[in-house]
Length: 249
Image 1: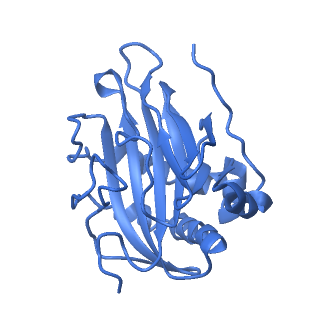
Image 2: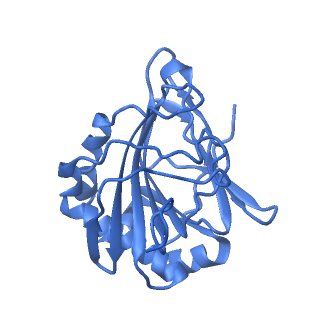
Image 3: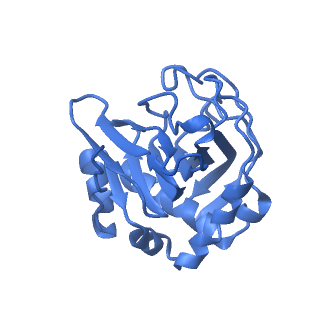
């Protein structure tokens, strides 16, 4: 039986300092609501869209366990605008499995992006990035993921421990359903230290300084035999200077 490590969350007023000190910070759902300035039901209004995610057609391991959508935005302060739909690209240095590919995914549903909470969520994540790296225009990519146990196992990070090539990565746990596993692991990119913990609370948040740490999430399995389980997450990345895969504007 594997140990279950609780996430070492910090209060919202310590998030920026903790992120700067150790390269990552964890917030519970109440702190996330406080940070964005929303009620729990406003975040919950986003969740039904995870039931409508199309399959990921780009998995090179042959798996059928991942569904996703992907959209891009530009955030300056409180101003958020959606960018024209575009591919997702990472270099091989950051993603040895899927790097070097122009991966086109279905965009986020317009009804989801139109919810008032969405722009507020993006602006707040960008504010964390500005707190860490300084105020600037942020090129933001949003990924909705559902990893399920089709075939008996689902891999949230089939590429293994990695960096994403951005200044900040924000990982929201949206929900878990009848699964075990899915442990988050964060390691220093240039040192021996690391931590491991399991996110279980919907809308808890892991903030990562992508230049200092690498991260991964371990595979999930069904907690009840012969029943499908899944783990839903929202990954928001912030990058300065342009979207990854494009020349700087």
